[in-house]
Image (cartoon, rainbow, N blue to C red; front, side, top):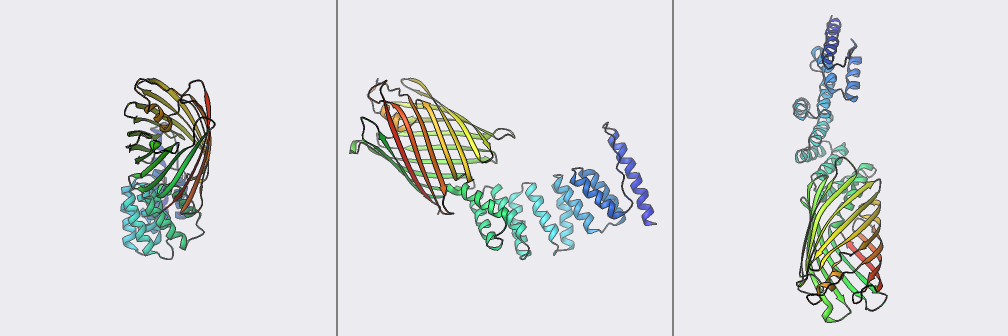
Length: 431
């Protein structure tokens, strides 16, 4: 008799589904099997096809006949998770956990629900509970904890989680990919020592520049402190130091900023520098755009540079175009810069090509203009091409090499060109 009552209920449901969709002009009749197992299979197929509402109606009919069925209730909770109805999912999951505190599935579904709801702190807490509660079956909880920490921008915590999980699950590909991603994101962490040498084809002895940098990836974004050193022509009059701070605040998953502040008591560097830029992904595309400004104060010559960029990611490659519109006391200039990167294991491991032409917005060049007497003007045209390679040697160490070839208008004689060969090397160690 129970089977026939279920059949009648499902027949009524089929008619109701037709009437409801008829109002929208899209007629659809859902024929439900009288067999509970077949009906449950249909409910799953409807949900996998994205028709969560109809799937739940089928499940509700099944629950009328078997209100305590664990699998029906668990799958109904899944449909709420997939349908982004997270409060409904929470209520069902809570009841399932209260009934059986040893059941794995509702604990895992609870984690998934909070991740999809972007309630990352709660998700992390539930993952930690799952790791302790199911010590022999906690791989899922480790992966989701690390992913939630990444989404919270707690990258250092995520790396610690992944590193611990890989000891227990060394064959997990998702954890391996997360570790590679995090190593590349955390490349800013720790100490970096680097320097460049500029060799001139005529007229000038080599220029030396170096820096020591310390950075940390925090929940608000990357923070970097840097001490720069410069020496032109190896005499004390051309020696200088500069202190800088870079901040990369993260506003959302798809947008972040750049803030730069610098000070120097030396003539070789600007006495004060400031930079500000906003970066954002453009819609749902693979394009990223930015807009910003740079300011350099050489005491007797203040330079303002308006800039922006448009970049595009495809596969493991990235290309961008960046113009600078340069304004100072003596006029207006432009420069255009192009960059291409081929990534290997992630953002910290790449081959880079650069090129540009115009008035290069390089403070090493502009400082020459800043050191001139009031009323003198230097408007130097330049073309350059560069190649760089950065390699993440191991989880702690990376190296970078750069070679830049520049055709530069002579500082002391316009329309007379010289060549500059710039060699750069940096070594970073993650602390």
